[in-house]
Length: 366
Image 1: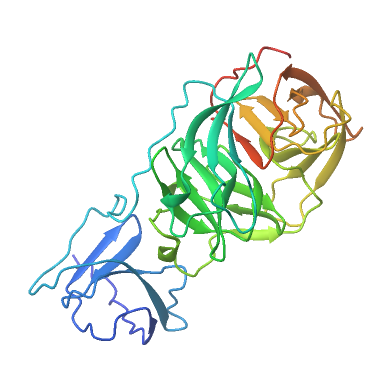
Image 2: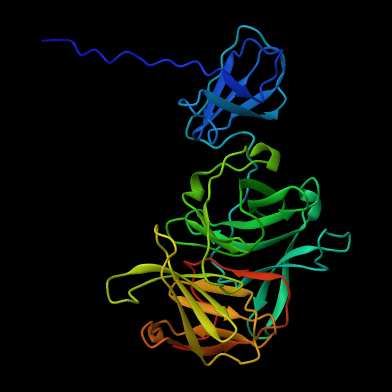
């Protein structure tokens, strides 16, 4: 028989690099973690990550980000478990999704720039009383400099980790992972966001002043201790200009057009239900439906919760919690019905989120 010979390897030399220390010549150690590549110089100049969002063979360019210190060494070689998370990634704990909590993020004494009296909390809605009870504080000193606020929070159903967008004055806007002790920076986002949600496939949708954007496959993305370690590339798709939406998003996969099940983003603004078809083509199809049963005095609906096939909205005015009766959504007639599901207190600069695979804690209304 004839022996199989693999094709010859291709070889490139990338001459246009940025971020590497000029004094480092020999790089004897390399590691690969979860598709991220790291190098350490024998001189002890530190550990550097290849910024894969800016790496281009065609342009002959690559940039690197310093991740941390490394001791001087000689005659060495690096090895790693390639499928694992990186040692520079904060160990963010998962959220317990067995309690059916209607969670909310809020920032007190909100201002731009932030002030010493401002605090950020995660809280949950006490269903019988309609009051928000403390869950835990997201401390401003977990970031350097202290962050301004968080919003557009959502729990990724693929890993049950809380994700929010975070504003840091004069530094930018970021998607972060959060637990009771720390945050991890996942990606840069296009400006202030105030509405966010995950779909069942782990795609994160966010809406803010710039429009609608999304990030696919968030579960597989690494998180880092500092925004400085994120690199310069863009991982989000957007922002896309759409008609004004409400202050929080819900996700629904349903056959609303009679052509099969599709994914829709839902929000409430005033007395209207805003519906946007998730699509690769922009601008997407959009509808505004009259929300029958909504309180006429409520304008801003800052919190939304999804539990399996149950979707709820609460206005900042404290006018209560309202369930969207999904089977009443009629795109042709331009109407959708809502039913009172519970009480809620007055809030400001808030965002609701929940484990979308969990059972609803609200009483049965439909």
